[in-house]
Length: 525
Image 1 (cartoon, rainbow, N blue to C red):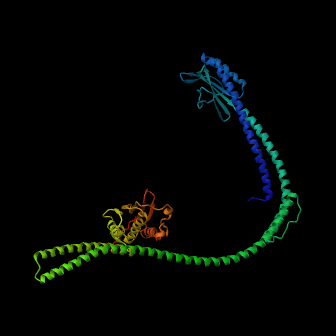
Image 2 (cartoon, rainbow, N blue to C red):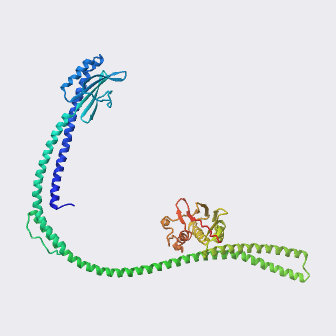
């Protein structure tokens, strides 16, 4: 638990004082320790350098007694506890002279061309090279005690502790005086706040007079109570107004929602009617073209059959009149053969048109799936659209495997490719004499991939991003509805469960990519 306010003020002041003292004393203690260590390091380096220079002659002339006398001079330096002089013989160091207590120095780099210093617990270890004109003669090892430095630091710590204790006593006395002068008026404020919180009576006020700062606090508190009281009254009035407005708003929202629902339903009905009209218009155009295409072979067949009937009647009259010659009979046979061939060829052509139209028209009006060969079906669609190509030099090329068989909705394929081809004829080839359409198809990863290309004028940049939106067209003046690609998109995504994209990889013309999942036919048992 946090305790009372008095306790928190008291603890806070003490903590701040202790923290301030530590912030000042700890860096000072660290600086003192670093200074003592640096001073000892400098003096030990100087001492080691002098001893190494004095020991050069002893090592050079092999005088260990002289070297021992030089090291014994360290008795004047009480901090030096041990000294060892090593001699270098054939890359091996051997102890040449020593002073003071024995020490382990195997863990130090005894042979070095520079001085090496290391601090351990309570000691400074120093290695100095013994050289003569850059020739290594050996190494000098010193072990220096840190006891004197630690004693100095201990005295400094005692002084700092006394200063810290004195600061704590002064802070304790100030904290008691300050908390007493502050908490008395705060306690009275607490009583009023508690009464206001329990009774919700914001008309209460604090009447006691305090020092200038606390007097301002009391006046501000009383002013705040007055403002709160006024605000509560105004809030109650506003809440009543808001409640009334909410009721009116709910009613308006219901009315507007109903209006929007009705408008949306009407829009959807209108959109469906327009789509159906577009489909029927496409089918009507197909019917008109096929009817015109059938009319020519049927007319030729009728003419040939009429001529054949006239020739037959003439031959029959000559036969009854006994004037029929062998040459006339041979001419009759030739005319019959030629007329029969003409009638057969033209009726076969008309039957081909009728069969293609029947397949495409029935599939467009049917929503049932069946199995069919894609290339053969595309050829039927192109044949049904041949009247639109009759007076042009445009051509359609199919790059589809002959044996590519699908189980899908052929009516969707008929509507899709009819829309694509008619869009190319109407929009893409508007000012082009010889247009080319290429349809490629193959299966990959259980998907049917279809690429549709034309080398026409391409899609206008203003509608590329919304080409599949309804009522988007650049040919509205010539009667374009803008529903062709929208119907195309719905058939691909909704019925065939695939996707269609307009790719921007052609310099001229348009490129549509269709990716359709393959459907396995249901087997009947």
